Structures are given as C-alpha cells and as structure tokens.
Amino acid sequence: MFCSKCGTNVSDGAAFCSACGQPTAGATTIAPARPAPGLPPTYAPPVLAPILPSPYAGFWLRVVAHLIDDLLLGIGIGILVLIGVAMVGVGSLRSMIEGMNGEDPQIPGALISVIIFVSLASILLGWLYNAGMESSRQQGSLGKMALGLIVTDLQGRPIGFGHATGRYFAKIITGLIPLGIGYAMAGFTEKKQALHDMIAGCLVLRKT
Image: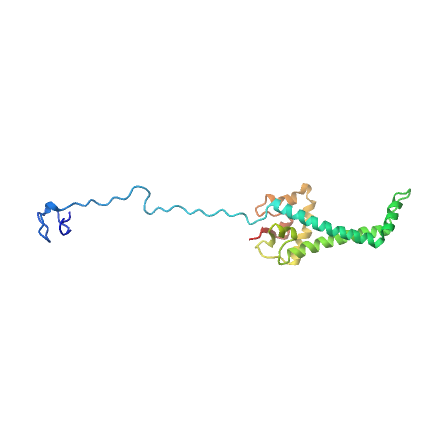
C-alpha cells in the first residue's frame, strides 16, 4: 500500500501515513505487474542461414562449355587439314585418291604423311589449347570462360601447366569408359568431378 498524498509505502494495519499523517483510507494498492501474454521475453526467432548455390560446376554447364571448345578446335583442325592439302597439292591429292580406287589400291606415302601430320598437329593443338588456357590467369578454356567456370586444384588454387597437362591426357582414360560414364560422373559425384578430374586432383568451379 502506498500513501495517496505523498506516495510513501504504508505498512499493512497502519491508520496513518508515517510521513505526512494522511489517513490510510486514501492509500492505494498497486497490483504487481503481470507479464504480457505471448512469447517469453527472452525468445528470439532462429536466424536461417541463406542457401547458397553450389560452387561446383554442374554436368550440363560443362557439356555446353565442351561444345564451345569443340567448335573452336574444329575450326583449328580444319585449318590444319587445309595446310596438309596444300603440302601435297590439290591435284596430287586427287590423283592419290583416284589411284586408291583402282584394281590394286595402295595408299601413297604422301597421303599417309598428311594424315600423320594432321593427327599429330590436332593432338598438339588440343593439348596446348586446353592446358595453356587452364593454367593461365583465366583458369579455363574459352568455353569455360563464356560460362564463368574455372579449373582449380582440390584446395581451389590455380593449377600450373604440368598439372593441366595431366588433366588433359587423363581424359584419354575417361574416354575409354563405355557409354561416356567417365564424363557423366560430373553429374552425380559429390564435387561434380569427372573421372579425369579425380585422376588429376582438379575441380571445375563457378567463378565468384
């Protein structure tokens, strides 16, 4: 109870306020405050972590990048074929082909040389293109650059030319797996790695 005049706390049973003499009949009783209904005052809603996209490049992104690279390399190989034809001459090449259609077909040595030249030059072109681009500052071929992808080691660091070379020739092993399963592994492995990525210890990531 509190005195209605001066606000002094008045003990129960007192007839007058000890401070101002006001009769206790004018004192008021203040009920204790009740907590507001609802959630406890200490409750805080949980903070949900944002769902970020996977940093690993998915299978279809890599397929599109590969198609772009194949198109560019096809143009380069076409140029090599033209160089090979120019080396023997169009007329000589036609005569060689006509001679192969005779009764005693034989493959001329010059034609074999052209085929070997184009084959080796194509392998060299593909190797230098892929390994050179993936070990460069761009960390990826033109196809990967177009889709915002980069090639790294397992710690997310850039790879060197030797490392990129190992990854390129590991694709030979990937290609030996029937039905393209070695490449399809990029669609269901934990870090979206194809077989050659696992062999070389590499990752293909989305550029941040």
